[in-house]
Image (tube, one colour):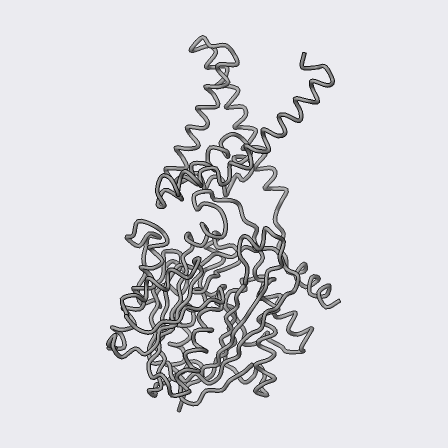
Length: 147
Length: 331
């Protein structure tokens, strides 16, 4: 009873989080990143005469490299604070989570620091990525789409 | 819960702060500041030790105090196993008590020290505390370079070290009384809204302090909570009035809102937090205000949220505690 009253006071003084503008920024930044990826992909197929699937790999490597480099240079966290999921959901966020953990834990050494903490944030993504890939692969197999 | 002290005085105090605090409105009041979060050390944990050690050195220097004169050191911080306090006080080579009440640590230390001094067992006692924005970010949240987005109600752990020298030797500021807080559980579980977690703790301690001593807000020139932040501050005012009919609208403020310029320093969100947040404001500005006659009696209420990352992930509520100390100027 007492807590319900308190909850009402807490809710009353909660500021508006401006979710709509955050979502819009994330959509625009994430979308722009996607367009850049597509352009790069097309570029790689033309410049280096690669197949589309090979070019995809090089495009992803480019993004992973840039995100890791920017994290190491120390300004990617500020971009993330601004663009939020626009940068965290694409592959840039995955690379950033590993590089930031590596930078953070290098003081504890290569084994107990970097080794055991590199996947601190990315581990969840890998585990559930693999699990859901298996799950959706099975659905495709059972429906007979995968061939 | 409330104890009155007869013979405890604040002889000296020192504050060392980091870059964000330096840029804040109280920047000029600190004894020493750093422009870099590493403070010349290779890691943030070492930087925190450095800050606390600096403040202890400064305290000895300011008070012309010898290491041999110190009978007891009481210190605490946010790091696992309060390592910052342990390593920083090593050079003092004095009897040491390590304490933990999260962000209420500074006043827990002051109450314990005052009790020792008032009993006559101890003459000179140092109480200290520290916190570092990025060492606690690493321990409680994500890697510091990750820059995970935070809601507006989140608070920003202050960087610094602060120490205070209490003694039975007469000085201008007297530690008049102290109230030890209780564990308060209001079913809160959001580590990004500490103001809402800690406001009931502060309310409970303030109410107990007033009823134990038969006082009210009008008996103080200033009532100051530790780190509720701008939203927690409003919650406390409303909750205090609705529950206890105590009006805090006239002479109440929060250290977390004073340490930073909330309009200009947007990165701090709702305000400062951490053990050193209230200590930096109190030791740099409020004690000076008392000495200069700006205030005659103030009530400091340091607020702490008690939890660990593990307890939050295991869906335990976050508990709150608040300790209060009343300081007054002697005539």
